[in-house]
Length: 198
Image (cartoon, rainbow, N blue to C red):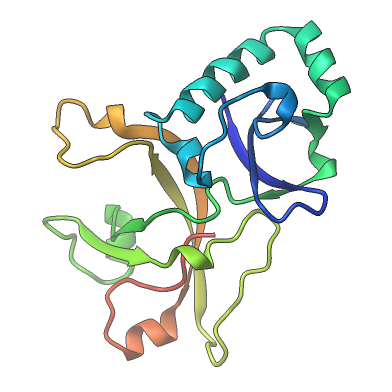
């Protein structure tokens, strides 16, 4: 199931649902779905929450039942992507932890040694934007750069995590476009930094 976040009409709060096809999405927030609604949006992505578990089961049922899709479509719980404004899958994540120099070729092309242990840094959640949204380059930066990144969405509390079961904590994967102001980065001595993934 591909989870998606979006705005519908003039609604100010994001909705969460799943893609039924390349063109249609199911809105878990619609009353016709009769799903338990979480107190906060992030709970949709918590694999231990009642809302997430109910939505996951419901989404699978609807995807397999075309007649049910018809009734939900008639009720307005299924929309086309063109009718909605698709946003970042998790619009305001609790935290973003990144790994610098995370593959050998990148370290070598940067003229840096391959680190013996992961180089971690964080990003600000409020600079995450969704597909087709504008990426804001800091005023004065003339050397902003971008990198395609592989994102891992953690779906439940992950402390501590044993080497035997890390995948128990993974909800889904996302594609990120990480943008960095390289000139600012070098000027203040950061080894890895920049804007949040987009």
